[in-house]
Length: 297
Ligand code: GLU
Image (tube, rainbow, N blue to C red; front, side):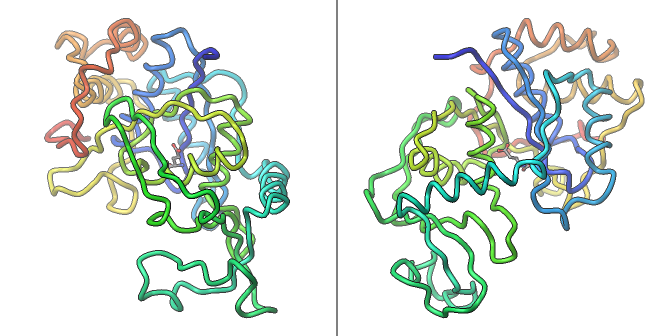
């Protein structure tokens, strides 16, 4: 196995919140514990969803929490050629096809039924590109480091979109191409992305690139039982040192790392030094949701 290289890959649709801090912190600690690298990738492939300034805020927030990344920040908006080349390769192998269908047309089906596999149904209309999942069908299986064996039936996964009708790249393609080109060995991210992983495994297999290890983390839910997210207006992470300290401590508690209470008022760098030295995935409890209780800002 090559050396550890992890990444944090936020979509700059708004500032980071406590849930994103927990994900960033876990991937940082997991990388640093083994002396590995930790990269930062801004996933801004969908410009209408990314307000101006949000990415800069994310960089400042990470710095404020002492989460310093290695190397230059990578930006998905710079990666058009790499995504296009990957799509061309898939087309060349007969594994990608254009599709004119709209969601409305197949709304009575649980997944897209593959109507355009053997030719676009409505020629002349805008097309999306999809991955053909019906060739060489076999279950997608992998071992999540926390949630154990994951097994998905390709017939239930459908033909994932690679490029949208409006020309924007789909997250699944971009993330696979970027993880491969950046030599990412370990993906550590929230449980909400676990059911995206089988499409990513399919694409890795189709493109013949290495498959990283995966560790999905329990999602933090607020007191209202809702997942903390930008959509339900989870508060933005602070950047002032006196507010950063207790929140970083709370994030370590949320990750079951049992930080000493005295650390709660220590500077971020000191908390992180302790946390790197003590990081243990085995302490995490495999539950999809974790109540944040009073720890959210
Ligand atoms: N950009 C995705 C998000 O912010 C995360 C992608 C990933 O970690 O694979 O939800």
